[in-house]
Image (cartoon, rainbow, N blue to C red; front, top):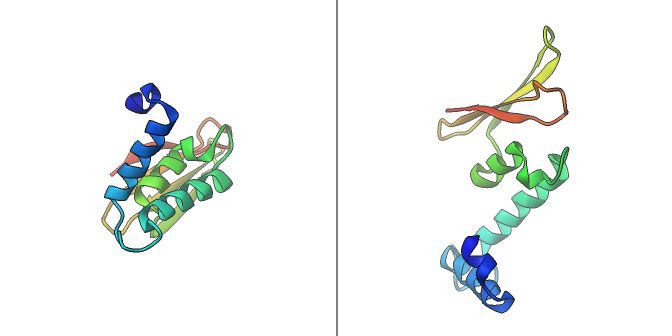
Length: 113
């Protein structure tokens, strides 16, 4: 990001294009499937996790963009303190716990395994 900020717009666009081209799983195809998936995840996060600000900047959005959709989600409600929480489970054994303990409607990352 620091490097991009200092660049002229045309150079920055070329840098980003070259960056994503290096990770293209099918370089001979017209589409970069990895970039397309990345954009799909950002759009999903913005659509579903925008409570305060952009959804891609939220904890849920960041985890979704990096790790993809979880295999299983466990939702819980703490009736004693009146807040929601979710645990996202992935097939690789990772899990992420989010909580809305402040009751602002935004689930924040509180634990990861």
